[in-house]
Image (cartoon, rainbow, N blue to C red; front, top):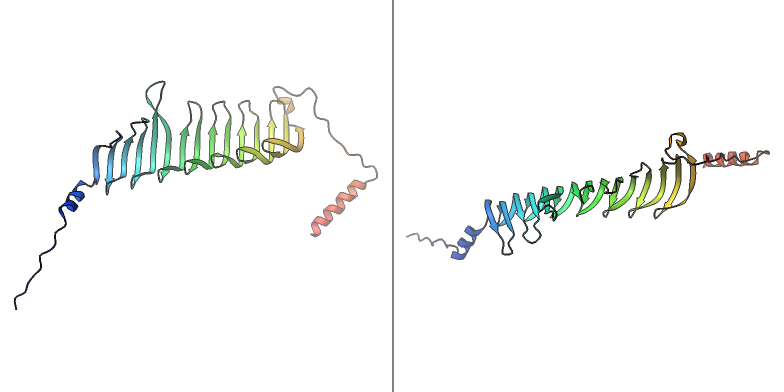
Length: 240
């Protein structure tokens, strides 16, 4: 018997044209309708690999890694400076899903910048912030604000060491008034000291010491009642 073979069906012509039009590999300048342009690597018609994107409206430039059309990996974002007319670096670091995620450095101005961890375009994790007024915060962040344990060092040398919440001092902390030679240790609520103790701390070396030292407080207990009560309390704690 004669053997008959069915001819192989060919794909429609539009599919062939579409496949040829897909951008893959390294491409030179590719313009969008709005004037944005990109130079770099592609995969399945999406920016993928190394590339540079320029946004016409804002003048922003991103140079770095891409993954399926989004900034992903290490890259640098720059914006035009209105004073000089040149581009200045705004962020250098890691990205994930088109957002700052991982370690990176953000420049807020000539003297203000942050270096540390990011998550979803917000400072989150450990980081150090240099403020334009000369203050420095180093510690934990959450939702773009100091949150957790951290230290704020003021321009004049005074510093706070303790806990933060929502960008404010909250919880146990110590404030070193090095200019006056005093140390406050206590509890804070929304950056207001609620209770604690103040003692002299390096008063002799302080540039602006207080006029009088803090007097030593002594509790008179001639009959030893307080001492006996404290001993009983300590014994109870040990038994528990």
